[in-house]
Amino acid sequence: MNPNGRSRNAFLSTSSVLKLALTVGLLAAAIIWSMKSPMAADSALWRPRFATPAIVSLDSASNREFTAEIRASSSASRWSARIVNDLRTWPCEIVSATYSTINRDTEPGWKIKIRIPTNSSPELFALTVASSETTSTQNQAVSVIPVFETNFYLLHISDEQIVNQFHTDPSGQYYKMVGTWEEMKWMQEPVNLINPRFVLITGDQIDFNGALDGWNNWANWGFAPKGKKKFTPEETLRLERRLTDMYKDCHTGYHVAYMETPGNHDVTPPGKLLSGSTNDWFPISSRFYETNFGQRTYSFRMGDFYVLMHDWSDPVLKAWAAKDYEVALNDPSIKYRIIGQHWCKKWNGGPTGNDPFTPPTCDLMLVGHGHQEVTIQTSPYYIYEDGPGFKYGSTGFFNFERTSDGWSCDQTVAPRSYDKDVWGLFTDNGVIKKVRTDQPDSRNISATSVTITNDLPENFYDGRVRFVLKKGVYRNVENGEILSEYDSSDDTKTAVLVRVNIPASSSITVSIPENGTEAKL
Image (cartoon, rainbow, N blue to C red; front, side, top):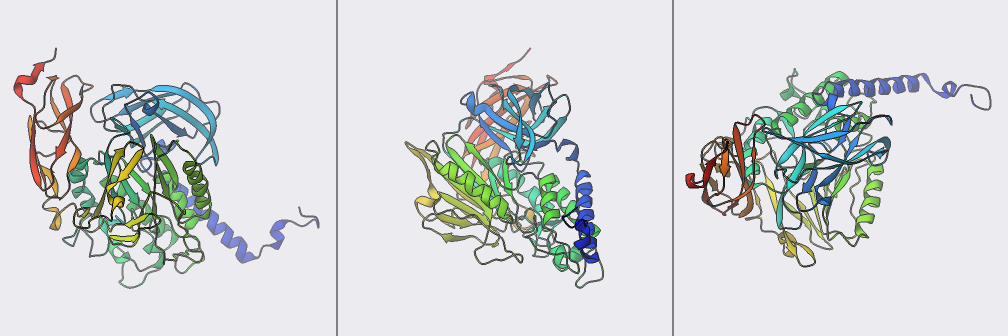
């Protein structure tokens, strides 16, 4: 009751009450639709996930550690964890389990510090964390690398904008407008062979928010008649669910970490209304994204290398990003700082606009949204835009060299070469992958020899293939370096993970000689 003895509801108009009820109903519906996701049973594992994975290295005990954030009650106990690939499980050590706060310290939960074993293979793994209350698994959630402080490269991809399964345009697009499930499949072999330390995704994973305007590709989603359409809230939620599931499905074959943050087609700009209604879709789409992809703004470290991924749609997240970045800026142990976000200086996506994070100083910023490859600025730091990924798998390449006092990026020592550092990953209709092998699957090679062909003008010195052969001991490899060897859980096969220096615009054959092989009892 207020001081005058009247209920607060007495000051709400009928229309306000109806609007509030509708908003609450839509939020509840969004949660229900989110819970229909195949990942919903595993949502207690808030981080790491497919779109926010952990990266650890084998070079020290501390670098083999990461923190998992779990939604569970304070009484949860008996914690355990394991990493799993398609052939084997590696039990992990629980270093500590602390009931604290998670999700940028906005809600209660557990922080579980996990250490992977020394014999882990440097690959991408699913993570399972269990307790007395929960057992949660997130796929493609933990990436293991040999060493942090060594040369590496990343790929930058933006604006995948999945809207349909199959392409109608040779570029892989659906009617020269948006991306397809199919072209994401075409990109898998090149990305896996190139083996970047991670792929940085700067937004618009799906092409959903056009539904709010009733015009963007709505006919492609099976609605009729042609022309502008007003979507119901239920139809809008179904579209968001369908495209999200399609996106996850076409990414299951990737074997490298994908670090992602949303764009305006994933999380609706604040104040953006569903056409023909007064429904602000921002709280619905942001909750939907978090339920299905994970944290929208976050940071991570690889030793002394710091990465901030930022969702430009939310001023609360910008405030967190600024605080987190300030800490990183004042930390002398950090030698390099990179920011990824969806962003364009001239775009105002909603009544309140979108709010990118642009600190005065940075080492490199990578952005999406403009559907073009362009250098936005060179001073005081480089900002590069790439995309659209939905057209021929457009990709930007960035190489980082370890120096005596930190890191140097080839593409900021001088402006990048658009002939050498930016390319598509496939040709018309996906007929030719720009990096490819003569075997069906570069991570499950059953022959003792594989030839890799690279049509791109870049040397991929940290490439990967994995042989899966009959159980044995494989001591040597020609034109490669054995990084790990392990037996499958069923004890019938041996995997041999090989690092390959893939030459630019050339080919190389990697083989395991018979004279270096021994039977294993």
